[in-house]
Image 1 (cartoon, rainbow, N blue to C red):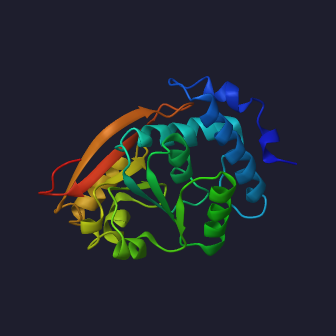
Image 2 (image 1 turned 90 degrees about the vertical axis):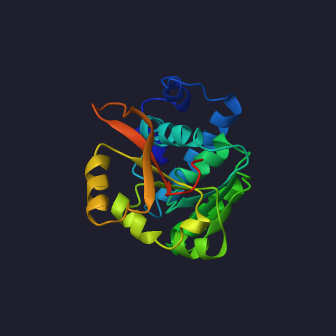
Image 3 (image 1 turned 180 degrees about the vertical axis):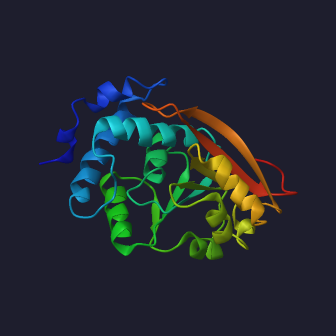
Length: 221
């Protein structure tokens, strides 16, 4: 049985709750993505968001806000893409972007390749860590959601900033504590950090934020 049966509402009903409009053709691709992802999820753990309510209120909402931070035609690397959030959803929302997905777990990378193929998306998949990708290519933006703390991500990308135009991270309420940890470890000395967006987390009293990091002395994009 498809895991979508766990939800009592349809995708259209959940999308209608959003404070912004999703075009019908985009909604159709989201529907297809959900069916494919949830089928795969029965074989390999990719997501806990296995109904439309969670998919829309978490995945679509985060991806839409992140997509707003990206300029026309930018090259974007999504770190630790897992089941394709936010990378694949951004590619559906913004077909003008040049999206690359980085996933070091081989089985998950193969699923991403299958999802991209079946959704007919012009998206590349790298079955390796983002650091290895950045050794060979540069990007206008790097995106990250639920892959590690601010300190850990800064440690990963030490020495790779010349290949990163800016880093965009989705974080929850704990971001202030994470920023304090990163500062205490001296990881933000050469970086600028700014909160560029915030929005309510549906069903909670908390909010999500998008943080932007870029090297000091570099023109902000």
